Image 1: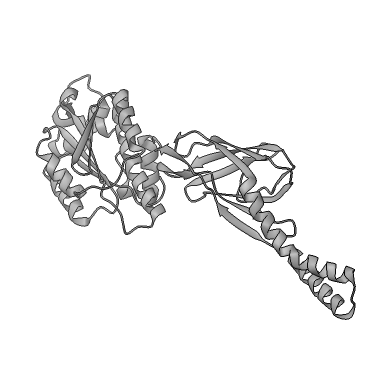
Image 2 (image 1 turned 120 degrees about the vertical axis):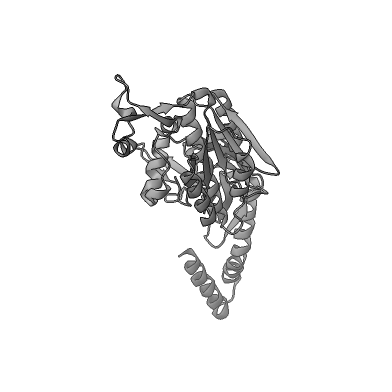
Length: 370
């Protein structure tokens, strides 16, 4: 609208000097010609003299809103207006709270900032990271519009702030519920799997055994009650193998989501094992095969913090890592293979190992957020 008004005034001043001479018509004409130059100089002046400081924690948990404060300042004598802030929104959600305390997306209700000479202003917002990892957050660029509405120029921020987001820790029940909605065949075993895998042999029922320990299918075949015989827990081990092969064919955000799913599914399995006091080992490959023993919450926290910046650059496929590690695992070990787009040949091999009595589970985490 302002541009239309300016065009009308400029046209009027041209017509005026065409039919009437004198100082006033020519002054009006030259003023209208100078307006775009003044507007452009104003936009550049505000950008270089406008001050913004961003305050946010550098280590956060994915999906957890954290305070984010902006300190804005006009240190000069000229009033500043028409300032809009553009945030990183692909990897981060930015929200503000209205007067009634209800959070609303900043992108839906952006602020138009106005600063008087030598005025300072603080803006309190909230950030929520959508993905784990280290990446820039906060203000991505600043858009400045002049007084007359002729120019809007967007300038990138000269300095970025980056934070590191740790992955979420899901319960095994949450993981199972989410995966079963997409495909029941992809859902991981229930939280009782550890106990079931510990019960690796059968014996005859003895008075006093609980009915929960009865193996009903084998009992029906044998014609007598059989119960599971529990293996010594100190000899039992869970081995979680994460597929850390890169996904270069996927778009960046989709690739980040796939990596998050694999890590969060593995963390859910490890956390459940810690709660049940069962020794677990997590295995992955980067330039070589790496592993960490998880036998208490302290070792779990070490791996959890490592996951924030774990890179997917494996030189071996999930199948190759599994075959390489299987040879040195003890006979009571149970394997959980965690990946995305698990190839059919690997699934066929797992089924064959199942028939041979080996304890192997494949979890395909998919590409949708867990």
